[in-house]
Image 1 (tube, rainbow, N blue to C red):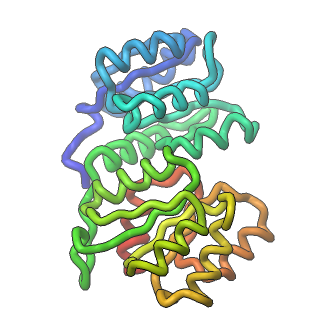
Image 2: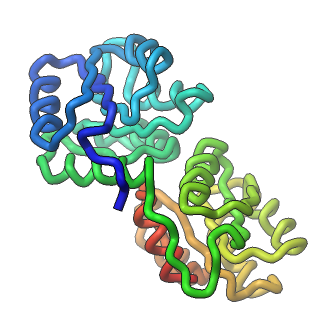
Image 3: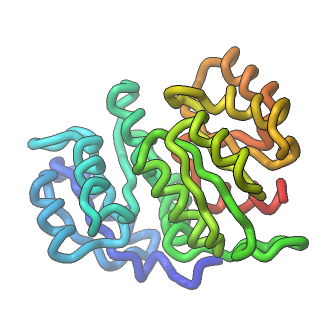
Length: 263
């Protein structure tokens, strides 16, 4: 369990509605959060973040000057804010808004209305993200593992890499698609492969099939990250030989537990 506490979290709330602001702030206070700041627009939020980076940004989807999606995308394009934890609170269900958020590595997407328990779980996931428990592996030392991350999104690769590094893994290679991954797999041995599903050149399912049927590393654990919801496609992914599948967003606790299980 993280040595940090909710009380220590520095939270920036981005919410244009005074009523919603008071509701969320009251919930945060009930859960022990004390270091709270509030602003009502994306531009003001970015200015505050750059002047004093918070541990966690909690934002609404629809702001006066931009969407929550655009806010997190601007954060991920700024080196000083690239790793800042982000949580969305919104009743939005449109894929065009939510899919880029999932790709940007958010801690959680909470609905409106949300419960105190849902917010509590998301804050605890933030603490674990900031200071995770180390990997507990019987046969391996985390710093000796070699892991391959495969994703066409730089931001997604960075988020996964950061999670792995916080778990104590030091030797990490990256590929932008399945074809690049194949070239690396034919040159080096990996203890674990973490791959996205939707990619150009060769997608995650095709990569998994190659690993299981054609590579010299047919037993290497393959973790698939996907926001796919089509049941037929998910069934195809499962048949391709993946060791586990994650939905976006996923927590570092989920990643740690899965790595401990497959290794």
